[in-house]
Image 1 (tube, one colour):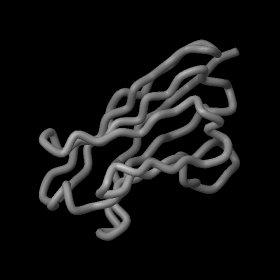
Image 2 (cartoon, rainbow, N blue to C red):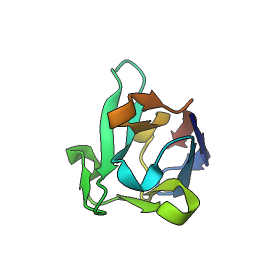
Image 3 (cartoon, rainbow, N blue to C red):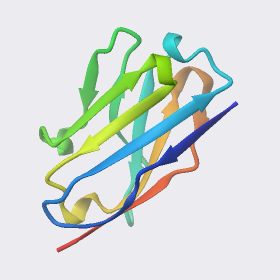
Length: 112
């Protein structure tokens, strides 16, 4: 049972990244999925989550810049991030709430 996140990197302010998280060992389509992030000096915080029925919710700081999606056939959840800001710099984690299962995290660095 694991979550494998990828897609992080370094971009300039205003740039975009697409994070992916592939799950194995769980019944993917029957689970709500989430992305969290931990920015410097802060605790890990919920960024977005998507329900079994594909309903997405976002943290206030997203402000319409990010989109969470899921492809059940691929056991993959995505986080498309646009108009990135330096304040978005941090480690992004995928999470399966019902299983308390965390991915390893992928680093996102946004320079001004």
